[in-house]
Amino acid sequence: MMTARNRIFEIRNLAHSYNGRPVLLVDDLAFERGSITGLTGPNGSGKSTLLKLLGFALKPSQGEILFNGRVQVPYSRAVRSKVTLLTQEPYLLKRTVFDNIAYGLKIRNRSADLASHIREALDLVGLDFKEFSQRRWHELSGGEAQRVALAARLVLKPEVLLLDEPTASVDVKSAKLIRNASLQAKNTWGTTLIIASHDWHWLSEISDRQLHIFKGQVVSAGMENIIPGPWAPSDLPGLVERSLGNGAAIKAVPPPTPGMTALINIDHIHFKTCDTHDDSVDENHLTGMVTRLILERKTGDILITLSIHDIQLTFKFPSNTISNLELFPGKTITLCFSARHIEWI
Amino acid sequence: MDFLLSGFIKAIELLISGDSYTWSAVAATLKVSSISMLLSLGAGLPCGFILGYFNFRGKRALRTVLDTLLALPTVFIGLLVYAFISSKGPMGSFNLLFTLTGIAVGQTILAFPIVAAITASIIENIDPGLKLTLISLGAGKRNTILTCLWEVRYGILAAAVTAYGRVLTEVGISMMVGGNIKWHTRTMTTAIALETGKGMFSNGIALGLILILIAFTVNLSLSFLRKK
Ligand SMILES: Nc1ncnc2c1ncn2[C@@H]1O[C@H](COP(=O)(O)OP(=O)(O)OP(=O)(O)O)[C@@H](O)[C@H]1O
Ligand SMILES: [Mg+2]
Image (tube, protein in one colour):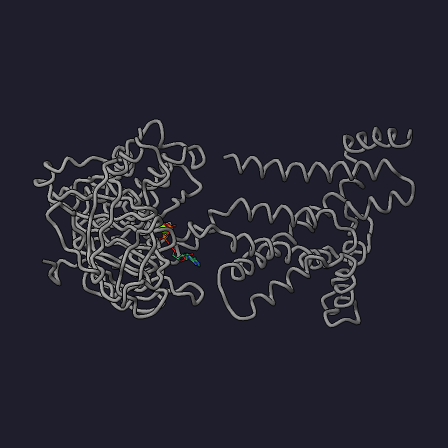
C-alpha cells in the first residue's frame, strides 16, 4: 500500500494545454518511491508531456505536482538536483562526451574526482572511457549518443529518473545496455524510474505498475484494452456495436455521449472454455488468433494478446492453469466479455 | 587589359615598399571598423538576445523594424549622421564631422541591426531540446542562459563576421561623414573610389588586395575556431 510518506510524486488536478489545446488531464495520481512505472500509450497521447511535467521541465497550465510532499515548480532547488529526464530525442551539448557528462556535476559544484565518476557512468552504459570520453558530440552514432545522454543522467545518481522512449531508436544491443543501466540505477541508489516505452515486453517484465495514457487521460492503473470505433446502433435493443467484418461485431452499452472511446479492462475478459454457456444477448464471444504471450513476472500471470479482425485484445491467465490449454501464437481461440463491462471515456 | 596587369604589379610593389599613403588608409579603416564593431556588438548582442529569448508585447513589431533597418542604404545613414553632427545639427557641438569617430558612429548604426537581428533569430531557433536538457540536468535560470549562449557561439561569431564584412566594405558613410581627407579620414574604400576616379589603378588594386586579405584572415580564423 502506498502511504503518504513513500509517495515521491503526487499529481493533483493537473491539466496541460499547448496554445489552448488541452492534451493532458490527470486528476489524481501518485508514484511510489523506488518503484518502476511503465507508461504506454499511442503516439500523441501525452506520455512525453507527462514526463516533462514530472521532470519539472514544463510548467503545467493548471494544477500542481508535489515532490516529496511539497508543491514544486520548474527551477526550484528541491527538484533540480534530484529529478532528471532523458528526453525522447536526446540532445548533446556541443562539446566532448566527457564535458557532456561532466556538465551536471559541474553546475552542482561536484568537480572532485570528475574523471572517475565519468568513467563509472560510461561503464554503466557500456561505453569505453578511453575510446569515447574525448569524442565530440557529432562523432557518435545515434545509439551511442543515446547512451551518452543516459550516462549524463546516471552520473548524477538521481532520486528520480524519467526515461522517454529510451530504446526506441537503438539496436538490440544498445537497448539491452540501456535497460540494464536503468535497472542498475534502481538497484544501487533506489532510484524511482518512470519509463515511457512501446517495448511491452520490457515494461511488463520490470515495472511494478503500468499506466496507459490515452488521449491525455491515464486510463488505468491496471491494463485496459481500447476498442477504437466506429460504433453503430445494433439490431439488439439498447446496444451499440463495432463491426468486425464478416458479420461479427462487438456489442456494448451505448456511451453517455457519442464519440467517446470504449475501454474493456483485461480482468473482465475471460477465456471461453467448452463448458461456458452464457448466451445472454449482451455477452460478447470473439474468436481470434493468439499473437503474443507474455509472462508478467511480478504476478506470474500470462498476458495473452488476441488479434480479432483489426482489433487487438489482451487478457490475463494464471500461468499454472495455462499449460493444459496448449496455447501458442497462431492458435485460434475464443474469449468472452459482457457488453456491460465496456466503459466509456 | 594591360593597365590591370601593370596596376597589379605596381600594387605589390607599393605594399612591399610600405608606401605610407597606402598604409595610412589601411590604418584608418582598421581603427574605425574596430570601434564600430565593438560598439555594435556591445549593443547588438544583448538586444538580439532579449528579442530572441523573451516573449513580450511588441516583440514582433520590433523585429520588423530591425529587419527593415537591415536594408538601410549606407548613403542614407551617411546623410542622417551628417545632418546630426554637422555644425547646424543637434550634435554639432561635439565636432564629429569629418572625423574617424563620426564614421564609427555611422558604421555602428549600419552594423547594429545586423548583429541584433541575426543574434535574435539564432537565439529564437535554439533547439527546444537544449533548454529541456539543461533543465533536466539541473541547470538554474542563469546557467541555462549562459549555456544556451555558449551553444550558439559559432552562429553569433558568424553574425559578427557578417557585420564586419559590411563595415569593412562600405563607402557611403566614410565618404559623406568622413569627407575622404588624405592622411586623416581617408579609408581604404574611399581611397579606392578616389584613385579609380583619377585613373590610378595600382593604388586602388593595392588597397583592394589588402581588403580581400583582411576578409580572408577573419574568415580563416573563424573556420579555425569552429574546428577546435
Ligand atoms: N510543444 C508543443 N506545442 C504544441 N503541441 C504539442 C507540443 N508538444 C506536444 N504537443 C501535442 O501534445 C500532444 C501530446 O504530445 P506528447 O509529445 O506528450 O505525446 P507522446 O505520447 O509522447 O507521443 P509519442 O509517442 O509520439 O512520443 C500531441 O497531440 C502533440 O501534438
Ligand atoms: Mg513522446
